[in-house]
Image (tube, rainbow, N blue to C red; front, top):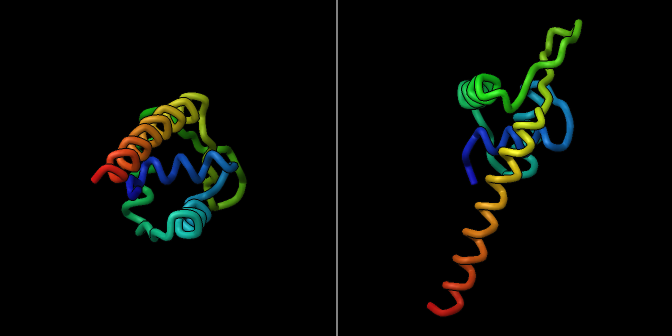
Length: 95
């Protein structure tokens, strides 16, 4: 899985994080290093869709949190991926 928006949502499902922490988390759990342009492009799209939102802070780093709509979208996407994986695994047995 290499869709940056799903990776960011998955990272934030574990708790609030700022951009660099999201990038490091994705590298740990997906063994995929997102460049800053890719990461912040995904963050912008997710904010525009209302799936994540920034948290007010005095720190220069801006943490983000997953919204209820973002959590629901992630769940839907994961359900779809699970169906795909089960189907592919079942078909592979018969190949």
